[in-house]
View 1: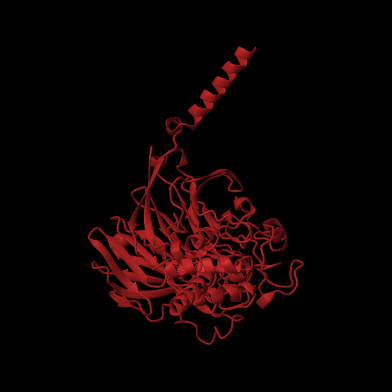
View 2 (view 1 turned 120 degrees about the vertical axis):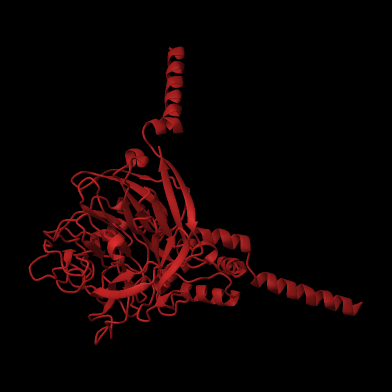
Amino acid sequence: MRSLYFSVAIFMSFFCFNFAKSGDIKAGETRYAQNCGNCHGPAGMGLASYPKLKGKEVPYLVDRLKTYRAGTKVGPNSSLMIMMAQPLSDAEINNLAAYLNAQK
Amino acid sequence: MLKKSKLLSAAIVATAAFMASPSHADTMGTPKISAMSILNGLENPWDMAFAPNGDMFFTEKCKGLSVKTGSGVVNVLGMKGSKGYSSSNGDLFCSGQAGMMGVAVDPNFNKNRRVYVASTSDKYHGSGCKTNFEKCDGNIVMRLTLDKNMKVTDRTDIIKDIQYKPFESNHPFGGPGAHNGNRLRFGPDGYLWATTGDRHRGVVPQSPKLLGGNVLRVNTDGEAHPGNKPPRGFDKRMYTYGHRNVQGIDFRPSDGRAFTAEHGPWQNDEITALVNGGNGGWDPRPNVAGRGDCPDKYCGYMPNQKEGMLPAARAAFMPMSDERFKDLMPPAWNNNGLSQGTGSAAFLKGSNWGYWEGRMAVGIMGIGFGGTPSGMRIDVVDIAKDGKSIKSVIHMPTGLTKRFRGLRLGPDGALYAAVDEGEIYKITAAK
């Protein structure tokens, strides 16, 4: 019985941890449509000089967005991305990353 | 009295319904618009040009030149790293906004099999291009001769010294390759018109010698039209100067006058009637016109290049068309003070366009920064006869929300549109 409690506890903590880290794909899609798609294109396909984002790993996307939000330059379009990322909440960043990661 | 007002209300409602009905619009000559994708899976298609038999040449910015014939697509000339082309040239490259862009077919194509292509090239960098603050000859216009199988038998570079931005700078859209112009069109005079951009260098647009921020008018050998009238001491190839980044140009059917469509810096996209020797009024140099120092010696996104602000306030500080220039060509239209990415233009010709015939179609890519609505669309603009204002502007009901990069009227009277999403559309009009 004790081992059963232990297993459930392990499962729950794992589940909660991942739920907290992973974003809401649907909410990410909605947020993406507000600003991001103008440059990065449908489903993050990449357009013109704006890079492809679809399928990128979640940690990479989260890190980049938080880096821009902090006002740190990474690459030639940093000024634009800093401006666009500053209003984003942690949850929105997670949602955007989840949505873009899910696009194949 | 009540009965009378009810009757009046009913009449108003009926009139409004009648005016809004498609059938009424049809009787007014509004064409019925339909759009069909004719090519997809492309990578950044940029421009199109038609041979007399309807073959459609098109460029892809980082791949090269191809042609859609009646029997399929032939890949004509590739760039560095391109695969599947009958020939490739290693000096042709893409970076950021730059790459293989404008294309035009010689008016005598049936006899000489010549096609003209604007592209970025490292062939003429020479001792320049070491920094962003020096001459950098990195955009060229090539004259290609093709055999009957669409293979290149000759390449002659007829313009070799259009300016190019080699390195990143501290600006929005600050990567290398910014602002190249590079739209090509033959005018009704049989001369080749080539547009250029300021390449994020403050001194370029008002420079008498550097090719950038101009509209050039040359013959098919790249020599200046003898009738060009730039100011004394300026390069004779210049028809106009003082532009930001001209990517739309076409000629009004009624009088042959050249009009440009230009992308503003977060304010004021512009349509301008060109005047021989005229000044577009763009001068992003630091320490002129009341401005101080600017990041990397370019004031084009100031006064606050890191945040959104009122377009009008931005325009007051850094005008697209500065009225201090006596030779200024004032714009006919400024997109209500907004910049949404005006990228191409084509006048509508043919009775199939109804009362839009003779109006200018303008492709807008959609740039939604600082609170500006994105606005991906094609506008139909009725320009006043004197070219100094517009009479109306409406959105063409294509049913498409795309980044309209290139527009070209085909020999069949249809409007062809290249979109950044990787497609080319055929937009037809019928009365």
